[in-house]
Image (tube, rainbow, N blue to C red; front, side, top):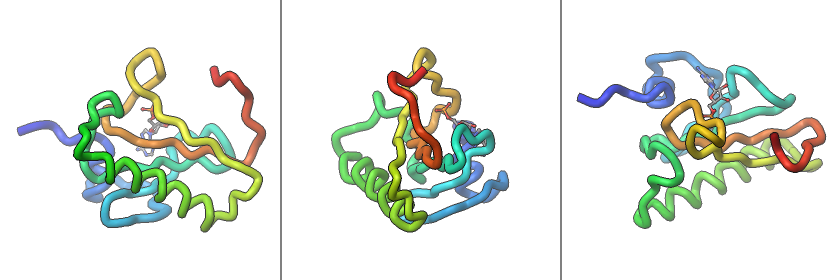
Amino acid sequence: MEELTLFQKIICRKIPAEILLETEEALVIKDIAPQAPVHALIIPKKPIPRISEAEEEEAALLGKLLLTARAFAAREKLTDGYRLVINNGRMAGETVPHLHIHLLAGRSMGWPPG
Ligand code: AMP
């Protein structure tokens, strides 16, 4: 049997996390090592390892993740802006092999990102 990912363990409540929002398809949690005053992770309940391995048939789910980010930002009134980030692969800084979108807000962001 395949080992559960860290985020699957959070989704099935085996590991605690601060849950900010839950939908049928996704969980939004507070990042344990926040890089901004607001740092949430939008995680699909389906364990897609990373965006480069997403399938055509997952297009609707991928869209829903963005809409979940939008809903969270609206609920939190992040009207000054926010940044969405997906780290894909080692060189991009991916550390958890379960697709997730970072939502960062509450401070000015530099560009290009480091
Ligand atoms: P990435 O490096 O893009 O794969 O993002 C993984 C993120 O998960 C990092 O920002 C970590 O701080 C965060 N993280 C790791 N473990 C936990 C945890 N137990 N609860 C919440 N966030 C976590």
